[in-house]
Length: 174
Image (cartoon, rainbow, N blue to C red; front, side, top):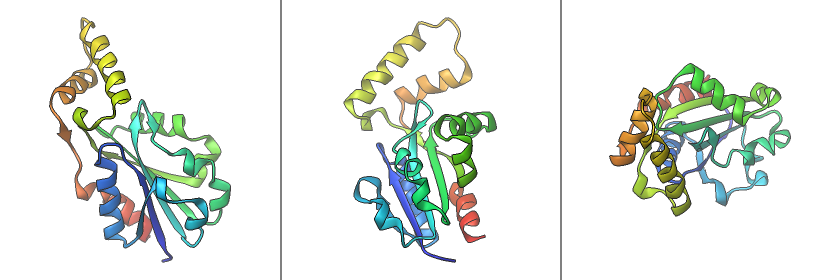
């Protein structure tokens, strides 16, 4: 097995927590996305990128997708974290929104349940969340997912579990 790098972009800490767990288990070198460039990743055989989900977009994933041609011959793994439970149809939506069919052939994708803490959000994200909460508050009937969103808005939730990283660890070690 060659060298592995774990790169992450985390706004509220849930993605960083998973990245640290993964890097510690493998072992791998750990990089915060703003402190790494493509040249720094050239010595690695496996590149793992993690980012939080924001309206099904993976935070910072363009760093990987725009440089996929530079990662030829390497294993590229991307994981996203979000507050929603893991559901196959949701995973397909995330993959289709973030990756072209060609990119999906080069990337192995995993979804890890993260969490949500309104207090850790940046001002612009808080603004968007308040709009969402306002819109949901005006609906007559809410879906279970919408009720869940309103609940975690009021009460921070951390769904992270170290054992959720097992699939990624097993894949890298295979």
